[in-house]
Image 1 (spheres, one colour):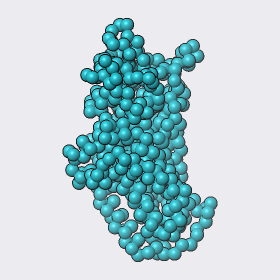
Image 2 (cartoon, helix red, strand yellow):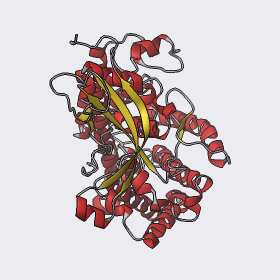
Image 3 (cartoon, one colour):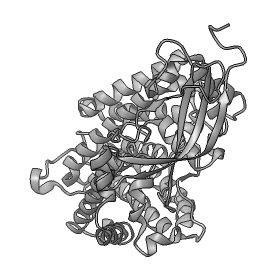
Length: 474
């Protein structure tokens, strides 16, 4: 069946699948290390409460059958171990049906987590990981060449990711059309990286070149993915280069890395490896790939309609299994950065004499003298939601109050999500939150003060709050 497989993409298939497995491992680790404080039985948005008001048909998850923190931890850690094994090549060491089953287990386990993750998992890259992971089930292993149809579906996915992001920019913020968005983006993006300060201070004309190049790569180059080789390989490499630029300039969890992995599947690496003959694929495998291809193309109707709509939306999933989704990023770019600074005090009265100490977060800006750290592809979910909460109190609804309550209780799982706890011996009596405006310092300010940020108090975000019955206090 020469028409069915493309053995020249054998190396690309290996790199794609093992890279995807590594990102699965990161995603499962993120879940295992953070879930207790976020969605555990005593978390800010507990899964058991969510399951009681949710229809299993709308949020398919094994946790509808039974939930406990122990079971969730077992699923997350098992997923991380299995993903690590697949990254090491386990999928190529077993028969094709077993390899497909292992990929399906990864997909099903992570789907179960995402569908109970609520606000903490409402990010476009969750759907992107699931859609990519579903296609990886059908990509085969070393027993057969990669199916042409699955390679096409991966290019169709990459097209929607890039072209959708390009269209949402042109239809959204005017600064994308006048090429000035990067005058602000590096400063106001959700999670700056260690190089973001330097990117922000690049000359204005270079920022315009960056935006123009981004438009070319996202609006023109995606069509070349469907051109003959080597044009498709060149298109994929241009996308990879753009994504690496974004990796250097920010912290977007696994969004950029996953896009790179998907783009690798379009690269023809046969000049490096040659074509190794493989036996014909089994008939059941051919039928399954054909059936899923038809399913994906039929379900692409709504994402395509969204792409063509003047009211295009970003990051929308159209089914509970996240099979075919709409993507996009930064339809608008903020001009001003706001940050919520959370503080506590031991004083029994939160008056003028109280000494307030600031909680530090692992990734988001806080201490002006602290250079942001690189965390991607690891996802700091609390830090991301704090950025959204600073944009509007509506984004903090449901979880911010429980977060403060857990700080007042000295909850260990919550404190593990933070970078610095100023109350290591006993929790504070009061906690408050204040909204600050942050901006990058200039070169001169950096030399004189050693600070990467300058901040100014805007207003009170949450007044001093205490427990009704403070734990361990009279």
